[in-house]
Image 1 (cartoon, rainbow, N blue to C red):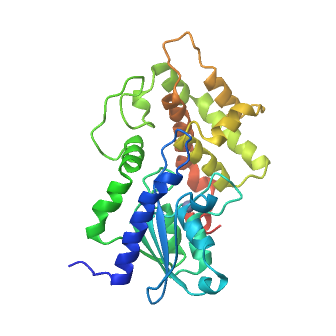
Image 2 (spheres, rainbow, N blue to C red):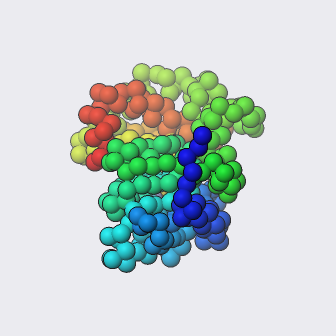
Image 3 (tube, rainbow, N blue to C red):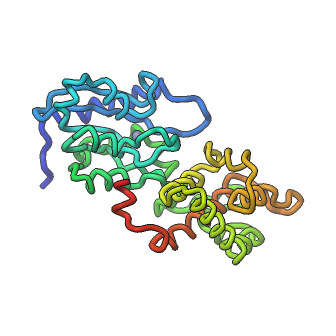
Length: 300
Ligand SMILES: [Zn+2]
């Protein structure tokens, strides 16, 4: 037996879905696939306080738009945030606070989420921040699930396919024959032997040491590779290429980029992802040693 939602919550979920569809018109034209997102904020009686669509009012995320539209008086009445997509847990811009933490700071008591974000940098971690901070979260009612997923069909399919959703692997042209970009089994042998070599691991360790020397936090190190892994064309990845540094991960990236063009290896975004993926793997394998606790990380 499923729990029934109040009419107010149900209406807010429907409005959020409409706003998500509306956000298509504000979508940036950068050749990347972005999600469509809508958010609605309610007080404890279910009265609507504000709402927003992604990229509306010149702001990035739907939650940020909706929060920015609240008056000071309304802010005190915030109870529920309804959003079609799991609130984000990290931002590539260090000056931006992620939506999960924004919602916590806003003092919301509950969050109703349309769908979890399949992007590798989120995948439940936004919801986890809410849970750890004692903000109750639940999903949209079952009868709206199909609609919310339909709204973001291509985004969800793209992100899930990219990081292995358990779906049947799709054949691709190029080196990676599988949809699991991080799977070394599908990398060219020369690249694989490089990525599994001691030299590579030592380089990653050096890079980690470099981050430490510069007093960059573990979370930043992890974020750096998570973002790099998520998009080989991300701003950070581009900056890595642009900034010459000493023997470190930056050199590794440079060397990788200079991987013999005359060889059979076709350098593409997929191979870059294999490199970043390997680094990320090293990080995850060593994360227990590398940081205090998951709880501390999420609360920082
Ligand atoms: Zn966000």
